[in-house]
Image (cartoon, helix red, strand yellow):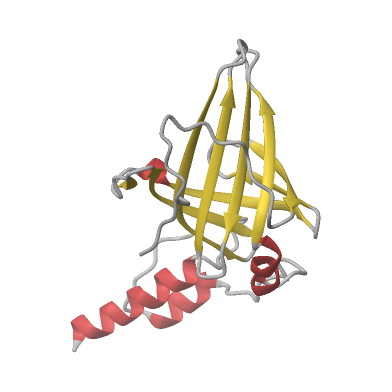
Length: 193
């Protein structure tokens, strides 16, 4: 019974920690003294985080979004992200070097929105032969971004770790990047789970 009570109090304490005020230092607490635990927690109702609900944000992010960036070596990187309602995404990249040579790469994975955070889980590369899975234990295959701005035409977001800002433009459904492939395959490259 004591173990269950201790576990319950610890669970309550951990759940409440995310709502603690950070301006007051936290004093050591005897977890078995519930009055002391309640006194130190000061749980507050969260302020309204955003005006746009996650479901509305998610709906706005569906479809194709195009971005372009100049590279330090004088080339450029273009990308077209297509987000589907089933939670999957595909990004087609086109890299053009300063000498004009081009190469393409396609990646796939899962995406979502929670509050003002947009996230992606990279699952692999698309090749003419099919999908080449990514190692799910690599931390860099999981990205979170703070949504900076979003309307029906532009989406701006900032990588939570690297601080890199991206701005992309909404494109019509028939828009495609020119793809450089060394094969004559004509079948569309798709992925599914």
